[in-house]
Amino acid sequence: MKALIRFSVLLVAIASIWTTGFLGSFGSNSAFAEELPATNFYTQDLSKIDLNNANINTFRQVRGMYPTLGRIIIENSPYKSLDEVLAINGLNESQKELIKANADKFTLKKPDESMGRERINNANYRL
Image (cartoon, rainbow, N blue to C red):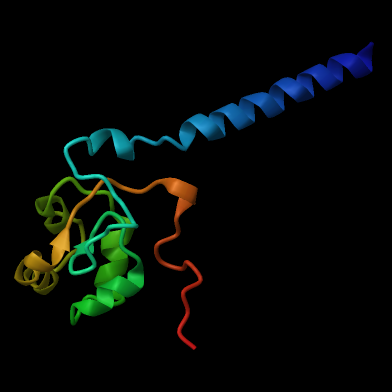
């Protein structure tokens, strides 16, 4: 009887952990971005850097953004507008000017929460 109770408690604990993890994967990031265009990696426009989804290596396209400023932008995402990017705590004036000067190279799309994407170290290494 004790073994059955222990098994039931263990089963409930596992189910609650799984449910919490499953529901938590929907995150609050996607709810705020209703007005942003959807992220589509099949038809994405590679001419602009998506600040909500870009990999750290993408920031190499803009001189002065890789690696430090790109990492700061990634770590503080998601954003609804470029003004939120400019409001990141700790940015100095030269970094803000660099972002403003290259504003035409950036875009914002809904954050992609699939597969817990790692944007800084996602095994894309140069050999």
